[in-house]
Image (cartoon, rainbow over all chains, first blue to last red; front, top):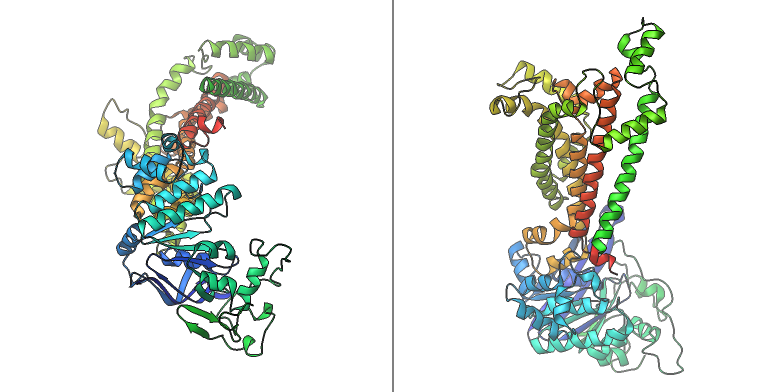
Length: 318
Length: 320
């Protein structure tokens, strides 16, 4: 397969001077064409920054210190503003967490969708509203965002993101703000539409089992780095990084019946510069001496890798 | 039906506001030390002379009775007679309205044509070069008092007239060129202030909209900055700008007292202030009441526009 997205040793900081916060501390990620990749991490792990960096959407306060993001082999940082806009328009689609906020409150749904469809007319608008399984498309088209439920608004946002049949859809916690009943429906929709259009998915989430259920690959983020990545089933069943293992035990959907939920002890780190040693060391149950001093090396190959001084062996349940 | 109810409520509240204003202004004018008779007749008049003058204008009656008579006349559309000139107040105001209206239109036009685009551009470019300079210029524009800038303009253009008239006013229907030469400097002084306030308000409003998630979403879709401003920013940032433009309009229609004095213009503002000094009650009351009415009506229109501009606040919002 061809590599669609390559994030290389990306370092991103917010603010400057004493107030600097390092959101990404050398993140590595590869997404192949048509792949479905779940990026999993707690809030503050850097996954949203990673998602924004792909489209060159980092806020003005953010600074790319090192590394590179390449979409279709072209460095996003090296693009001219015009090229970057063309990339966003033709190659990328974004779906955000807060669906109603992502729509202009003063414009009817039909017009907003019509703008994305670039003058294909009302029939195309209604057709897309139907494709995202909205009942009564005519009524939705005439509505303003605040008149829709969160689930309906997210379907509209998905239609707007998928209308250009992008190569890569970046979904940043697309169901976190939705009622639990509609979450699965919305995810079904995203994955069905993407599969139909050959669109690769980069799904940012905090729910490891939910991601592993739908994605072909999973990348686990901690402290601004991807600490483990690999085929979803392998990462979920046989995590090699102690953080992945802890994450798995902390989520209700992963625990078996009668099994105890074990929260990950301690707080995620707030980095002000490059982490000395492993960022997870203070919370790690199996911490070794080098963990607090040396940055862990990359162990494994591109298909299945882990950043750890003492990774669990491949295939062993942790 | 809902719309009719909305307007009925608005009109009722406007009427209540104006009634309150009428009471306040009437009470205030009667509470000023030294009545009309004393001011007109001077310090050496006998009490008999004063009583005679007061009786002639009905000022010897009870305050409540005077208020009742005045209010009844106003409701009939009769604003009374200037006690100084003997002319109907309406005529006196109509004589001075052209100056005030012209100053208002020029000031508000400058605010809309210069201030709004300036605010949008500085907001979109905020953070880049010139952002701090723009903020500084805006701050100065808002905080320089009218009399300072006005005096400076009078001083400078008294020496270098450049064909402009300093002081005095030529009516528009008499000679358009002369009218413009006499109005451009005072209008510029007022416009400076109006532009600065409008630019600053627009800038804040636009910057507030630019951080909204739907703007990020539009950027993520690959829309150009120009498209985003035209399509999403203008309407969402319009409300505070509309409010400030309305406030400037109402403020200027009430009379630009300082500028009128500085440039010796026969406008409404200086006329009402002079009337206060002469205890010309009918003029003072009518002036304040008219200014209040302008404010109330313009605010009502802005409220109506709010519902149109933002569907969340309009009838659709009420339906929830």
